[in-house]
Length: 206
Image 1 (tube, one colour):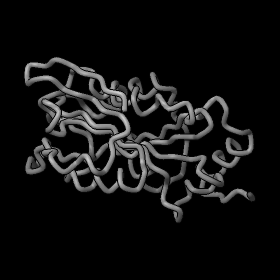
Image 2 (cartoon, one colour):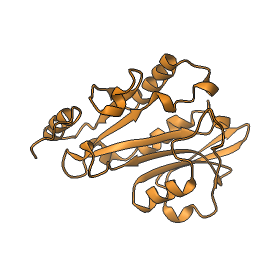
Image 3 (spheres, helix red, strand yellow):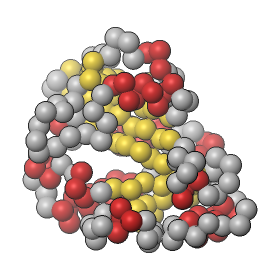
Image 4 (cartoon, rainbow, N blue to C red):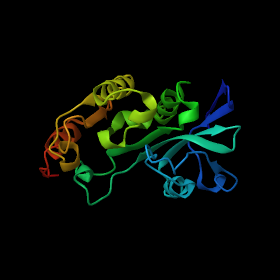
């Protein structure tokens, strides 16, 4: 399991790729879930543990190797969702990249992404993400919605993501919302074609 360390004013942060379910027992969840201005997308360590138990890709940033202060989660889409329509396990979702407020601006989000996308098998897959403006931490960042949107697009673009059009209802609720995808270099032409139709709710003929 790959590990990267960063020295911060709060202590040393250990970033682990491929975290296993049995390793959560002695971990603490270091996100403040009581703040009315912002809540992380996942609010319990048990949720991350469940992803790991299912064999999904979970990357953790651990302050002093015991407090969860960042996480990245890469999952297979729900079999009943439109995004399962490429056939097999070709399509995956970047379900979350989160860093606790007290440890932002240390490059932790980039390292989480680097670990998640270090697997060469992802070059045969399509990974998509949905970023909803109502979940963004505008209060702490000091950014407006447009600037926060630009920041996210720059971050994800550095890892091969491109913005795509879609009629997915939640994305369409706000013009600031973002839908991006990373299409691996070895992804088949058929999977690429299927993904094009899936973005507009059309089930491809497999």
